[in-house]
Length: 299
Image (cartoon, rainbow, N blue to C red; front, side, top):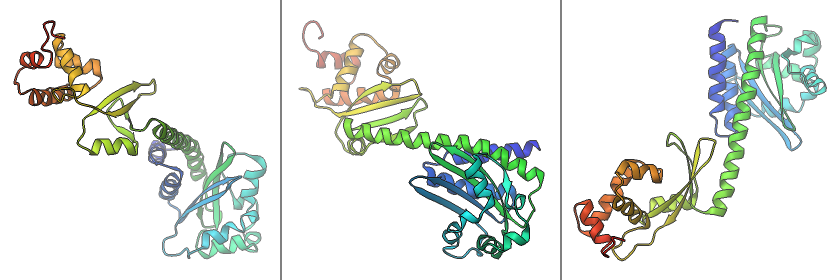
């Protein structure tokens, strides 16, 4: 197998793993698999106890509406499908591995695939929990060479891993939605600052003009959960976070040191200080401390 083929398979799996959910994963997969093997059509199957899901791409302008749904009704005629279900083996296998072209064309499923120019199919399968998933490519009869079979087998391994990533993302999203329903205003960010989840309550707070206090919870998986709370002002109109920043200034910390303590950027600390100066009607750190903490002990 050529190195360029391996790279193309890895790129395909990477694209599929970025899908936000299983439906988008399937659509991305069949499009890229069809391009990878240069075939007229590709199909993704997701079979489980709660029902089946099938995605088809191609041939453009040839497959009539409802064709896939009708074809699926005759799936039990497929020798390859029976092989996957009965053995649990990954493949790849094709219809032409089991039956002759004449035998295949006697079946409804064979005639339907012939009519759209994708008579034979080469497929692979993998298990995911209680579901059997697989994808296949369709082309003319007995046209699947050894290199194409090797390429599809490699794609199966990479795609199975990509599918596991998408499932984990879906589970994480459901957990986050549950947490948000309980905790209210929640934002989840990565170590790089990318926002991966914002609850509706958090979005309302962020869209509003009220000052917001952040409580950050760092986890070991590279994510930080930020619980947002609306802040009440003190006698000077300072928010809880603005007063907290001034307390650190009073203790002699630099903006960078304060940012490290509060897990925010130096720019955020500077913004809090500008807001505090405006509310206290001062222009320096010393004057702000004197105005905010007027008692003899500076507290």
